Amino acid sequence: MVKKRNIQAAACLLTACMLLCGCGEKDGSILIGNMATQNVEDRDMGNPELEGSGEKNTAVQSGQAEEGQNTEPRENTIRVYVCGAVINPGVVEIPEGSRAEDALTAAGGFASEAGREAVNLAEWVKDGQMLYFPTEGEARERRAQEADAAAGLVNINTADAAALCTLPGVGESRAADIIAYREANGGFESCEDIMKVTGIKDAMYQKIKDRITVR
Image 1 (cartoon, rainbow, N blue to C red):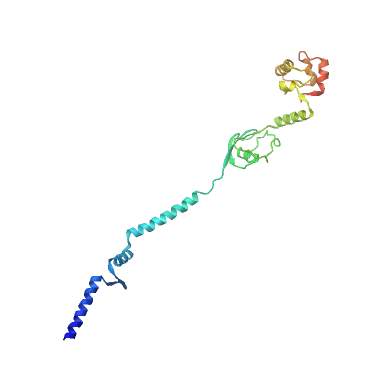
Image 2 (cartoon, rainbow, N blue to C red):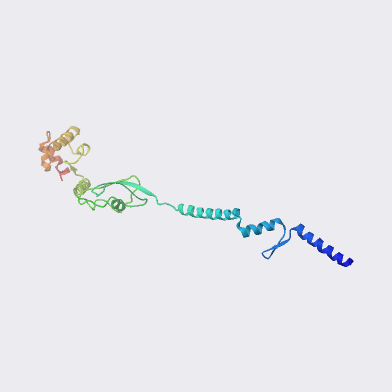
């Protein structure tokens, strides 16, 4: 009888210990204490705070990915004023490191009257530059002027006062007379026509005839 009472007492004590410690079984797992129970319930029922944390982490990672995409280096551009014999003259925007050919293309290409070989299309261009494409007539005149300059000739139809003063016997007043004559009469048709200017006679013409041109 005593032994039976001892067994019953031990069983009661064990049961009490189990109740006091919060031991139990849920879904095949042994849980001890309120924290374990809460963790399992969070796992089984879905804790809103945990779910929100996961979504937040995902959003942060997504934001970082998008930010990384937006930080890709952008191509630098320059602005160049393209004018003259082109289809669409004006300011164009082209990538930095472009050439005259790229600026021409951005302006629509050559106009029909353009002097196509007057500008070096392989030349590098820079920001703020003005790029002028002359007509064929302008290009011809420019080539003639360059040839005259190389030969030491003064074009009495286009030379300014300073250039005219380089001629023997021509001072500032005489240079002004030459310019006034060509403006009034549409220029000189031949070198000899310079003698039509007041004060220039044959003797002076002989001194300058090998130094002047009208082309």
